[in-house]
Image (cartoon, rainbow, N blue to C red; front, top):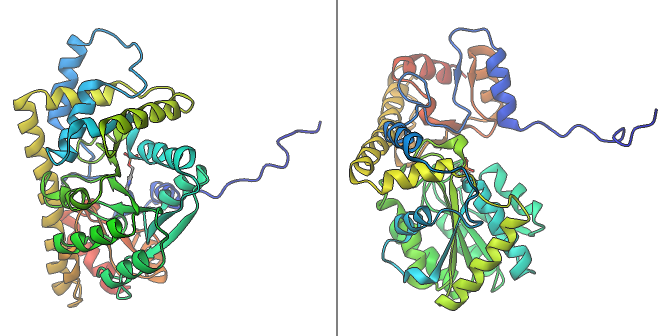
Length: 396
Ligand code: PLP
């Protein structure tokens, strides 16, 4: 019988998930996975935070309904998102916040907003970037351009290249996607002064900033990590922020994020909010309740909020400790190779400078899994096995 599906070809597998499958099948007891993008604690687990467990316990006892949330999400949750990201930088009635399924959901709604309200509009994206960025904007038919970001040494920020591209190659009205902190995949972030320089070009060229804020609290702290947002808000009246609580609350699978759009005044903000709701309605209709309820329960309670701050600090400082230990161990076990540049990088990820051949050899010879670009998930390292990792890297 003829099938209408006969001509469908198999899509290429997701590169990182493919590695995870290979890792699972590897029988070497010494195997190590530094490819996936989740936080791990000293025992190699991705734990449920204690503040989350406490909030969930409260919710199990007190939650009254599983009825649908409003299209734009839970009101308390949206207020907390606004406070965490914008603080008192701008008048709150100028910010439209819509709860979304994770940061990816926020980016997808942002791309839909560009397509439905602002087309024709192009978006400028850093080279390199998180692999899903291009796919998300492609899905909403938003044309993309690339701006320089990582310097040729693959270790530092190419400020001049980025400024040059934004100044000379963009058209007024284009959008520019910025990583607020903990740039994925490189870990390389601009300094506060450099953010001011970037922001002034964005304002001068009337570019629409889209700030991807997936790692608030993983760089230097919750307030400290708003440096890019504050630099942009100082000089731009309009901006989009796509944020996520996947990493900083460890709520990955609960899909908790938000899109926040800053408009020039409250009236425009109201119109923007209504258009965002239209986009959501025909996409996933309304967001999931549980993760946002957990976040709101924690942030509504001073003790639980303190617990969250402490647990977030522990995650951040553990990653910084691992960076330090890795660099020191590379100097010894790692035959003196200098990886000191990792100490200037932020967040879970770093570009190691390892090339595709070295990455393959690490996998085939040492059962150590790193993505082809050389990106390492620092949070996947373990104190106990640092010698093993560094000796293997030195070997390749
Ligand atoms: N943006 C960046 C840069 C990310 O690294 C990620 C997650 O890895 C996301 C967005 C999306 O996160 P979420 O899991 O909340 O969709």
